[in-house]
Every structure is written in structure tokens, then in C-alpha cells.
Image (cartoon, rainbow, N blue to C red; front, side):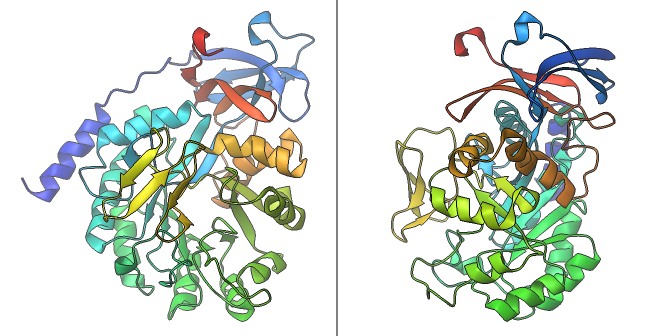
Length: 416
């Protein structure tokens, strides 16, 4: 069967795929404790849009001590619950995309960017074409607004390239990127690259001119190279503190320039493994809630049992009982096995920041970065992408998730 025919069948399968959710009524109301004010509110929704957020004297008994907040936005999802966006066709199907989306809804993630990492041109093209079908699937409710390309234009040195396969690392290629973006339906919203590589600065300029957010990551850029990248349009550091060699100079390393540049945002992984609590605290003190995004870097191994696994590129990885996912051979992490939900509680625990600030970093900030003005905050006129949760000892338990006003997840009684 030809590739074009396969892709057509896959797209049709997405449109007819089975995603079960409770449809929103034309008008409905939801009550909860406002995540920012700590006061009870009633949120009115009509046709998938928030029409009002009004205070109430007392919550209905059914809502208890449940907070209500804008849904979480994860800008780096490599895969989830056994589904990989990064590898071959056998691993990426319409059913897989639907499954990953449903599982992320259970974690309160209402918007996410499927992330493709360093791979061959053929695999990247094929997977972007498959993922582009999901953009047209009404059953996904707009949960996928676009994609993140992490690599292949990164530093090839061990440590700096992290778990990215070295054989596929290459120099920035604008013509190749345009081809990849066409395959993705023009929806590559972010590309992560190493600014010190040959041709990277001109590539950054072209991406910026075309509206693609440029992130620096998996790099060893010095201050001059980093500052020039920001001048040329780079906006954010991808998972700051990771994608770096274990042994670096105490003075001349890629961390100081990124922290020192006030224009640069950061994304950080707060799963408790990628960064020490004191690292998160320092990064937060420097960048603040306004220029920090909580991300997950979650992979297809999330929600799988602990053990040893072999990747499609033949590397051995280990998922520990504590939830750490790593490459023992290189002593580097292999993405995360924890959803971004865990990071919301952890950043409060590590920094002492408020729940309001934590939610800003996982909802409003990414929406603002990608100019998705229809989501990210709890206010009239926005999409009714909402998450309801309880929090105890910095651990969030998702009670309900609404996407565009539809109840897509509700915790069962035996989970309470």
C-alpha cells in the first residue's frame, strides 16, 4: 500500500476514532475554589466558552474543597502511556494520538504540543504528516494546536545532545525545516536548537520572521552566541539545567548566559529528577513566574511499570520504581515519566510560590508564548479549558477536566 493511501486511511481513522466524553450543554455552570483568589466562584459556560466567573457565598456540597483553574498546557510531550510521537509509523497511529490525548486529559492537560525529537528526515516527515491529521479531528477539541520540533539541529557532543541519537544530529537546514513544517500543516510552533552550530543564527532569524518560536537547548553556546541568538529572535530555553554534559567549566558553561539574559524565558522540568530543588529555586528567583514555564518532557514510558526497556534505536533505558527514566550507559536522563501535573505541586514545594503563580507557569505563560489568546486564563471570552483538583501535601489530584466546555474526565468514586 502506498504511503499517501496509508496516510489517507490514518486521517479517516482519526476522524472516526473513539474518544468518549460528556458533551457540554449549550449552557452550564461549574463551581469551585478560584485558584488565584482562594474564594468560591461559579463559572458559566456557553458553547465551549467561559461567559462569566462570579463569586458565590458557598460552594455546593458536591464541589467540596475542589479548586478550579485554567487547564494545563504542556509544550513538550514526546509521548504518553505507551504512545510515542518520535519514532516510526508502527508506534504512531490515529488511535495512539487519541489514547495519549485522553490519558493527558486525566492529568489536567488540556493543551499540549506533541514533540518530535532528533530523527531521520523520513521519520520526521511521516510522523508530522500523521500528526497533522489530528489538527482536523473535532473529537480532540483543539487540544493539539501545533507541534514542537526538538532537534535535530543540536550539539552532537555526548551529554549536550542528551538522549538524542547521534547519527541523526545535523546542522540547521532551512529548506528541510520548511519541508517538515509543510508536512505538519504549517503548525510547528517551536523548534529547539543549538545556537553555536554553523548556520544556526541565520536559521533563527528565518524562523522568527515566519512566526516560529525558537528555543535554545541541547547546546554549549557561550555568552556571545547565546546573546546573539536572543537578538536574532530566540525566546526561551528548553528544559534549562538539562541537555548538558555532566562535566562542565564552573565559569564558562551554557547556564550562566541563559540566566543572565533578561529577555530569555525558560522552561523547566519539575519532576524531582531532572533538577534539584535548589536549582529550581534559583532559576525561579532569577526568571520569576512571568518568564518561567513548567514542562514535562514526558515520554511514551510514562505510566508503564518500572523496568528495563530497549528503545527503537537500540539503546537500553531504565525506569526506576521511583519514576526516574534514564540511560544508564551515558548516565543521562531519557525524558520524564511524570506528567506536568507533578511539576505544579513540586514548584510550590521547592520555591514557596503560590498556587496562582504555579498555575500561571503551566497555563497562561505557554499560551502567551505561542500567541494562543483563546486559552490559558480563567476569564470570560476564553475557551472553557478547565481543570478541577484537590491538593494535599503539594500533590494534585485531578477531579474533573473540561476541554472546550466538554467534560472529558471525571475521577471515579473509588479513586477519591
